[in-house]
Image (cartoon, rainbow, N blue to C red):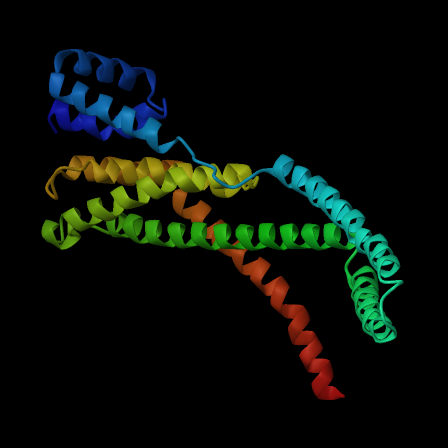
Length: 282
């Protein structure tokens, strides 16, 4: 393998500062001599920095706390305003004191309607505490749904990445045609997964999913190496990727993640199954 190919295979580990002393020395010396590799590495470094910038459009906890205070204040203001029609009605009745008798009946009916609306509003409208409880329940439900969606998306990402890794590991250049590996397709999918990894790392860090976050980081490094492979015949670079998968124990970590996910799903479905069984017995 030429020095350029050997250097480009090391791009991913260099970005994450995982090269040993000998590899660092070779890598730095080669970048000083090769302008093409140096330019490509600088572009990758710039791209990775951009992908790691997370945009968080959703409001935080401080916003929702302020929202509840503003909501309670607005409800109190509406209650104060709601009491004003009563004094207006009394004033209106006094102005009609000199009106004909039939107008009293009409006015009385109107007053009863207004009083009925006011009483209904006071009795049946939810209190501030009820609104706050409803807001909290809605917020908790939304957070739980977002957490479940994130975990499902992460495991889908892991399964897609596992297919790429198995294709590379099971490839035997001595017995298989190199073109059977379909390297262009593997590189394309790897690039897409590397881009998605930046989003998942940030979300998993916010949700305190440390194990899944570390697994995504390992997969990102390996997939970045696969995306930089140049040819199906570059067997030394492919072997380098295989060694990286083995040294990091990526497949073992994926297996553990699958087991934990299976246990969680089973623990959620078992209570429902037990209830159904009791109902059948009854």
